[in-house]
Length: 187
Image (cartoon, rainbow, N blue to C red; front, side, top):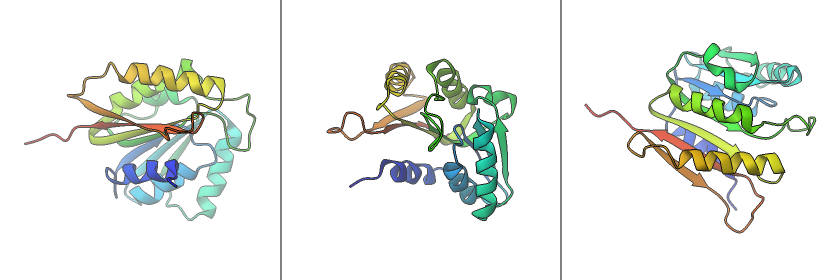
């Protein structure tokens, strides 16, 4: 069976490498931050966001234990404030919408901040870059976030970005993700 989160990372790997600047918009416990940190290496940089100090503390501890290079900036702020911290361009961004795994399920990403965060993320993307957004429709806000994003993505010019949705068709509440890829500039 396909593991959607592993597939999510495989698509990211086609766009990023050593020295790139990337963003983890929903740090959680730091698993995506770790993946990004190790992929962009010593000369790259990862910015990671979470609104919960416990997530920042957990991620900081985990990144050290997991042997990540010190190429990251952990930010306790909402992902919709990304442009206060990151000038861009970025080569990749990752969102895992929902709540902190193992945390308080009443604290979740919300449409009011997810939409401006995604718009800012797309604006920060450089050439041949990618933004992956994992959506969890198994709870009401997650379902509404996914529908809101899909409606927005339908309005984007296919001449500027390619938006793909990857979903398990016969499991309505399974997570799915969107990929937003920018075009390569031709010389």
